[in-house]
Image (cartoon, rainbow, N blue to C red; front, side, top):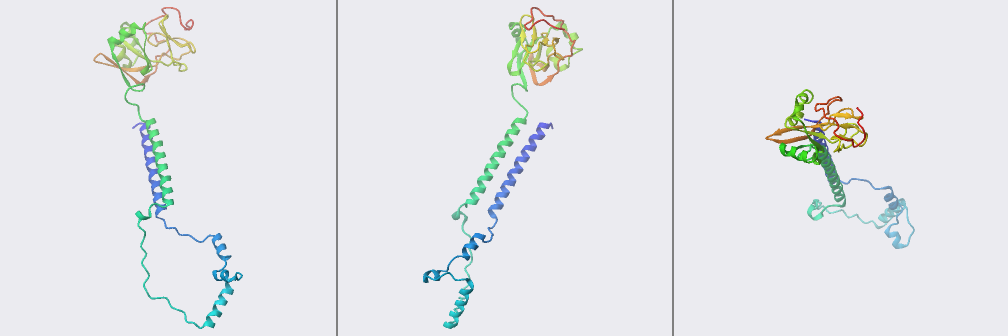
Length: 291
């Protein structure tokens, strides 16, 4: 299992765990009973309030002790017997129907916040997985079916020796069969699979600083316009600051059809490699070669 797959699994686990924690917290908030105490403001307001009887009679506010003394005096004077409460059993408490009560404001806010968090985490997780997931299908980074080798060679010759495939960011050129003996001592089987069929697939980037290398129709070389690196038609270094030849892609030929794996980049050959012996066939597009 590669590193990107492990990271993708970890992100999914993190998103799921976060959603479970948020849902549990919201559920706990909804089921917790509201138990509290009177605030200081409420106590102060009650302590300073006047009694109904005092307001009705136009009297000044009396203190608690004065009210107690007045009640005792009135009780002694009236000599009335206190009426005891009835002996009827208390009415059992019946919880309200949730469908009738509906969602409280607290429940609504909790559910809304939880929903936003879940949606946000899900989107973040999906973006991470999409970024880390191995690319499939067609395009750069995948195996590209270029076409029939004979047709490709005809197309190369019709384009003055160079064929560019933008979907694979690659140059395809013709490899001479006369150079295969030397090539077998230098190149890997993944490269030789295409070279023995007569073609080679080169990565478009200059190995010096990554500029896109164009072809030079007059010299029949690749000549980088950024810093002057030069490569022959099969990507072997001929001049400039490049530390090696052009990088190339793994190739496969099956039933006469060329498939280039742009997800497998092979480092270019070392300086001094010259299997074809090709020299400049005309003026350079970016100045003279410096070997």
